[in-house]
Length: 320
Image (cartoon, rainbow, N blue to C red; front, side, top):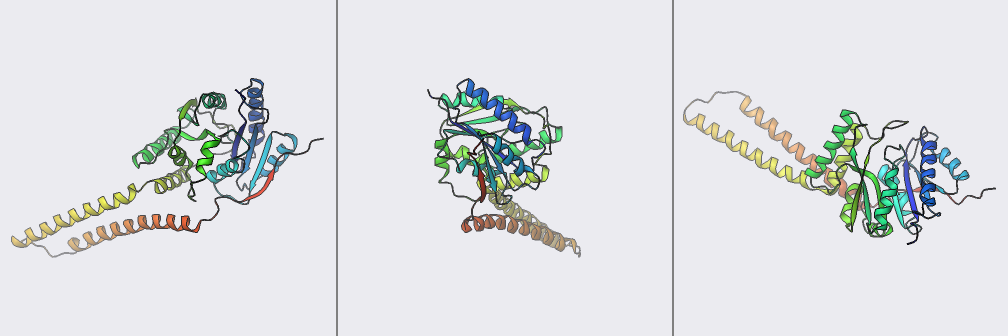
């Protein structure tokens, strides 16, 4: 069997503090895999600059000038983590056999890459990197992250528990992905929808060596909401349930008023008027807001704007 021609895709956003180390670590590891005949010498590492505001792109350019195994892709602005991954993948879909996406912070154990390659050579089309040990995370980070996956499962979103965006994909997966045209990207949910044989590789999540997390609680909540509204209509169903509950409460209130009237115990006051009005008005506003969120998603999809725009690609530099 011929060694796999691999592309490592590394999305980067304000990673100047760790990018040089990330490059050295991934380059040395890939060289080891080449020496072990697991991957082809033509395998490369693609760094995608997602509109960074620091020196990230300058560092990527310097890396590409010195290292012929590195590719630099610069997006015209910040499109987001998912779009940056997609840009690195789709711009090189015809050049490589398989693709692995990994974050630049080195918290994903690179030793899992070799295990993914083995699974791919044994027939797996997708290999998910799954974190089975998050002891390096704080209690808050670990709890919120695991709650995120549980919430997604509860809402019916097809995600792999404790899997982020560290995964291997065969070229066939990306070719099938081209038929998915949605603008609101949530790759953790889309890739499982494609199907084909998949496997998991388990690893321990490592500590961040430099820089700051790009997913604080606010972004994690926004990311979860985007995933839920892109893949599940369950929140709309909740509105139906909430409306039925409100109707039931209204019947109870009507019954109570009728009972009080029959027995002459009605007490004049604003509570019986204001409280139901406030409750039902709030419920209606929640329902309208939720419907508006889905209408907004439809609006974005109908416009069909590009998911990313590439400003510059640096590769195949001449070295003297």
